Structure formats: C-alpha cells, structure tokens
Length: 253
Image (cartoon, rainbow, N blue to C red):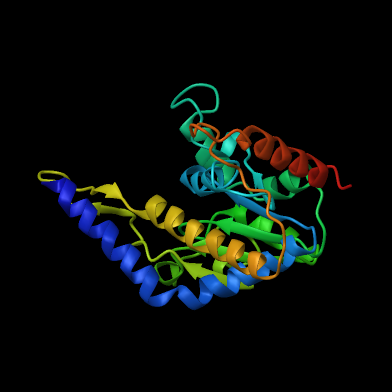
C-alpha cells in the first residue's frame, strides 16, 4: 500500500529532524522565550501550505499567548481554485516583490519581538520582504524550511539572497526539495507531500520547548484549555483569561 510508503517517508523525516535539529530548535525556542518573557511577540508568517503551521500553533488547545499569527488571506489556501482569489493569483502574489512590505504596514512591531517564518524553498519574494523589513526593525528572524535542499536555488528577490541566507537562525524541516514523496505508477509526478507534516512536527517541538523554558523561569503562560472535558468547571474562565491577555497584548497595554 502506498499509505505505508508515505508513512515510512514521514517517519524518516521526523527521525532526521530529531537526529539533526534538536540544538537549533532549542536555540530558536530560547530566542522566542526571551521575547515572550519581556511581554513581546513572536510573529509568525508563511504563504500557501506554510500558513498551516501558523494556524496550527495559535489559537488552539494547548497553544498559549505570545505567538501572533500574521495570516494574509490571499496568500493562504483558503481560496477558490479558480475565479476570485484563485491559485494563479496566489502564485503571482507570493512572488510579487514589495507585497510583504505592505503586509508589514498593517501590524505593530518592537525590536525585541521575534519574526518566525515558514518557507519550504526560501526563494519567494513575499517571505523575503518580511524578513528584510523585520531585520530593519531590529527583530531576530528565525526561518523553518527545507534549507539543505534549497542550496543552489536562485532567489526571486532583487536583494540576491534566499530566506535562509537572511535568517539569524535556521531550523531545517528535513523535507525533500520536491516535497511529494511517493512515486505513482504511470505518472511522472509523485504524490504524498511531507513538508506540512515536517512543519507541524518542528512547530510543536519548538513551542513545547518555549513553554518549558518559560515555566522554568516562573513565567505565567496563558494556555488555551480544552473546554469540552467533563467535570472541568474552570476551563471557560481559563480560556477567557487567555483571550483577555491576548487582547491586552495586541492593544499594546
């Protein structure tokens, strides 16, 4: 069954992450924890399927206040396939230099914030715009993506650098460059991509490490609880407290 082939491929990627990326994940988590401890943000951004790790980490059960999702709707896959906000427009926009600078104008930043970017290839202009603007504002830039596989690829940005070359710290997702991993009989193209699974894996390895660091520093975390557990009479209040804290931080008070 090809299901088992995909599962083996996914396990191999996860094992490679564990074998090669633990030190980088801890370094990334420490930078993020430093920002959150100071009352600042870890901003998160990606395009296409690289918005999925952003949507996964916050807001959701087990996530906590400190991560600010920057999800630009035309750059997500919550679009029509054709017609308005279709795939062709998306492909154009993620390569449009200058669009990222305009996105940055819609948010507030502090030099002690951290910018956390997700990109499989690291070559498209919007992500590079975000990285350049973030560095100009004094923020640390952390990039998760298929860094080793991206070596030798040509950037689509006039700065001449890929996202991985601009980053202060890179965590390699260890996904193959072509992403799809399972050959299919009578077809040229493979199926079964693994990069999203790799992103989600590295997200929770990192976020749990951030939480561990902050808990060791006696920093109170506002965690989104499960509010459907029988017998837990305080979960709604804990959720309300987390949302209140998020609103307070986003308002800058």
